[in-house]
Image (cartoon, rainbow, N blue to C red; front, side, top):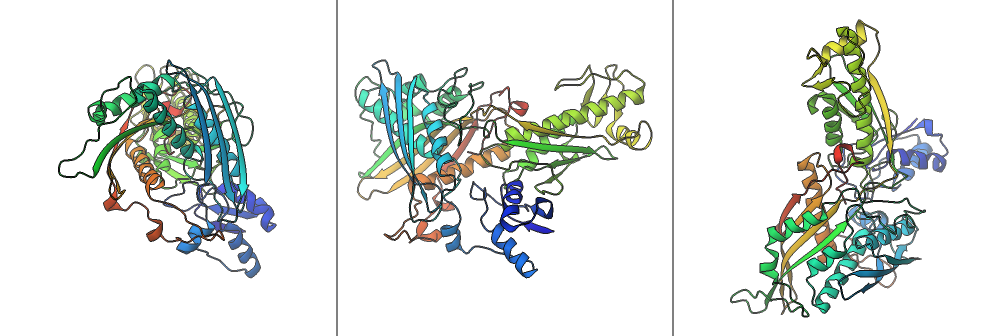
Amino acid sequence: RLVVRTSTQVPFHIRRILSPLIGLPVKQIRVIKPRIGGGFGNKQELILEDLCAHLTIATGRPVRMEYTRYQEFASSRSRHPQIMRYKVGVSDEMEVVATELYLIGDTCAYGTHGLTVQMVGGQKGLTLYNAPYSKFTCDVVYTNKPTPGAFRGYGAMQCFFGIETLMSEIADQMGWDVVEFKRQNWIKEGEELLIAKALGEGREGFTQIIRSSGLEQCVQVGLEAMDWYNKRGQPTNQPTNHPTNQPINQPTIRRGIGMAVMLHGSGVAGLDMASATIKMNDDGSFNLLIGATDLGTGSDTILAQMAAEVLGVPVEDMIVYSSDTDFTPFDKGAYASSTTYISGGAVRKAALKVADQIKEHGALMLGLESPPPSQGGAGGGWELRDRRVFAPDGTSLTLEQVALSSLHQQNQHQIIASASNMSYESPPPFGAQFVELTVDTETGQVTVERMLMVVDSGRIINPITASGQVEGGLQQVLGFAHCEEMVYDEQGRLVNPRLGPYHIYKNNEMPKLEVIFVQTDEPTGPFGAKSISE
């Protein structure tokens, strides 16, 4: 059998795509994802796996391939370049009545994600303010440059940059308070994302209703934390002339403060699916088998937390096995911000099934009537906590007692359950970002001094890993907005394929970063959670 160990976000997709390429049936291919330090969309498709497989089959020898830094720039995946043209129509009452977006997406040498990135950009970029009349068109072109692909944000980030810039310009020209202008028009809880059904991801989508939103609270928290109006000036009804906040003895330095809002999604509605299996061990601990891929995001940890919460044990009692196509159940993979919402839903369902089996066997041991299925609740007064199962009358058994009885004594059977999860909804997380910076009007030097991100991702399962996700995103977006650029010559050849001339933000260049969570309860998510990674 062919065993492929690869730094990938999608082990099961790799196996499926490899099979016809190399002429081996799926049953003869095993894909394992080891521990890796990131993905960001770049590892969402075949990169080197097929080349290694062909060479192994041809030689009968193990093959390892690793890109040089130049090859990483030129042959892996980057973001799609875009030209965007926005039009926004507003009334005198600060109402956005119509929006239009035309995108030209450059898919470079090959068509990887070319259409879907533009569609996601259109869907997100036109639903943030959700005008009653919207129009989206796009063209995708081929050019002789290195191939782009999926990259964190997947087309939405570019379009939010466009619409937020335009909304700020409109507010300035009309003399409106930019915060109030945006607040009046951003999509609100209970509203439908009007263009989402017509504009899915590569196909027609599904009706999406906002069932939870903390955007209003995110903005308010950010305004207070940044002392927004004192620094920017109070709103007037005249075209804006912002105070320069010129530092003393630095006549060429100007200080600015800005705000942008955004939303995203939690998986691809009607497409993404995940599965999980949980098995009880003799000592009352559990094995959690998940196809979900931890890319350094901490998903193994938070999925174990979800199962532990249902089963009433500390997370240390959950032994996690993930990302091995031979042994773990199917999962579409880690992309589209789906793991917490989709894979977490599968884990919670499997844990509830196991909890019901524990309660049922506990009732047998105690000579009590079998409890009804819990369906997410207490299950007829039965409860799992502190590594014990409690009956309605207060009597209890340790989980170890239940495990040993079920395996060796009464009605012997393995307590085990599997579950799958797919959703036709993709609830948006929301965020408000605030930035303070200075500009040297003589040299053009921009220095970002402070960034604050206030996030609504529903219930936060693990604040530490969630904060890490946001902080990493802030570092990436700094480079996108400020200094990173892949430069090509007239023949389409990359001229800066090294980290030095490409220039990512270095540690000593980073501004002060702050992350605040505004927690809401998403009714369709596991424990009220939504996505966070994009």
